[in-house]
Image (cartoon, rainbow, N blue to C red):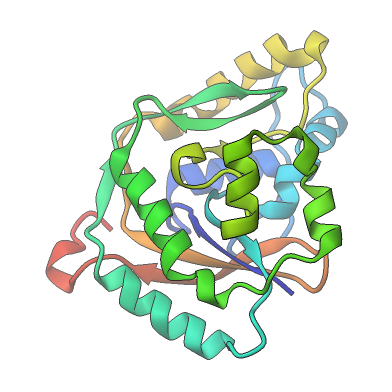
Length: 235
């Protein structure tokens, strides 16, 4: 079983509900959700292209999935994450937009968010002691031969290549999309998510995600409010 530290909107947020329908699974309850009726896209096509992000759930990864170190426990992790969250002020992402991410599609901030970048870097550093070392098999699955020198160093220091200066905030909506389908699915995603992306996105909680068994889907284990009580008005 693995844990991950992420951002995901609240359970009732319109973006959470839209993403649950698109991906076919609610990241809070873990329940399967009927796919949306989108003109020009079949339900089997949607299911195929959302298979990978459906497993991980709708979230922006801040600290990559990790197994607990031998001398650590879930109770200690929860205690320290609660303390950490209370020390970080809530903020907003002014706007998220659908973007191409390599051969896939996801949501990214329309402008770089230094606050999100700082939050991710702080979490990676503060909770590295909870992470069990990567196994050789885990390292090979990341394909270290395809990494830059900085990414390779990050992998061995922090357990993931895309941290610190290599971090880019993204919320995946598809796996790899064939080039012939890319434009059509990108247009459908923009139309489908547009109502849920009209307002700024409040970042007022840090989510602890938990994997269901070994290789199962991830779901929200707990939400940890950011900042002092008086600073949580945007929650």
